[in-house]
Amino acid sequence: MWLGIAIGPTFLKVGVVENDRLVYREVFPLEGRDLTGFLDEVDAVYQRVLTQFPAQGLGVALQAILSYPEGVVQHAPQLAFLQGEPLKFHLERRWSRSVVVASEAQMAAYGEYRLHPEVQRSQARHLVYLAVENGLSGGVVVDGRPYWGAHGWAGTIGHIPIQPDGPECTCGRRGCLEAFVTPQGILQRLQSVLWRHPQSRLRQIRLANLRVEDVLEAARFGDPAAQEVIEEAAQVLSLGVHMVASLLDPDVIVVGGSIVGSNDFFVEMVSQRAHAYGPAESSSTPLILPSHLKYFASVWGAALAAEMAQTAGRSSRPSRRKKSP
Figure 1 (spheres, rainbow, N blue to C red):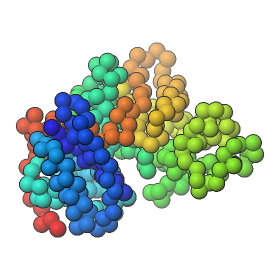
Figure 2 (cartoon, one colour; figure 1 turned 45 degrees about the vertical axis):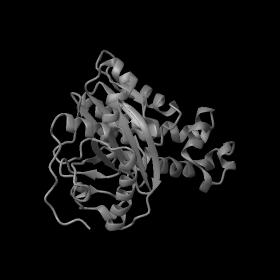
Figure 3 (cartoon, rainbow, N blue to C red; figure 1 turned 135 degrees about the vertical axis):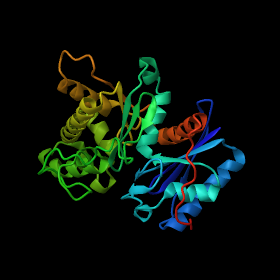
């Protein structure tokens, strides 16, 4: 059995994988807003699950960017109290065992590589995963193994600027890919165009209650305001996909995160537009697929990364850093 834990700003997702099957999964709230409280909460969930499922190995995915293999948090806007913290060291010190630690998107990439039926059928060896959540992040698999990059930043494309005078991004700059395609970005863009579409049924919903799922559904059924912002988001993300395809030449690009949900409509739009960018004679255009593992992709990936590390005999030794709280 292999245990995967995915940590976001307000949640802990936990899963146990055995023989490529998720035999247990659960979501816990996360309330800690300082390092000690955070570690206590993660530890309590770990101990609870471990009593039922004595896992052989453990992987942790964090909604942040971390160095690899050291597991030091380098960029965590949603979990600012973890900035600069050696998370891998803290967890290994508490649990007296090796822990594979990486970003959610990087873990999800490996999970999709291992278990996505279309990836398996295509016999792909190189994959990029793009996660559209609170931000736009990515993970890379090269020749069947996770590729972390020199500093753990491989696949991070959200803050590539594509329109200098575009909408403001959470990073403080304007026109980043992320500003157009995240749920928050789409909803903000919708507010700026609704006045042009008096017939839009979305005008009947209070803006505070609107969800990106509502906008996607409205676009699918022809709502003009929804179509305008979703078309724009799909066009921008397809440009990002084209950049990734040109730079890395993967077999497959998987799009996941909350923008996908249970509806593949948006990914189909992105795929059509991305393929239009490529040369007509090219046979190397990657497959562009919606996530298969959906909400638990990073949990699957974390567990399978732990299995990979232990099977390969390359589990990292506990880091020698400052004492854990």
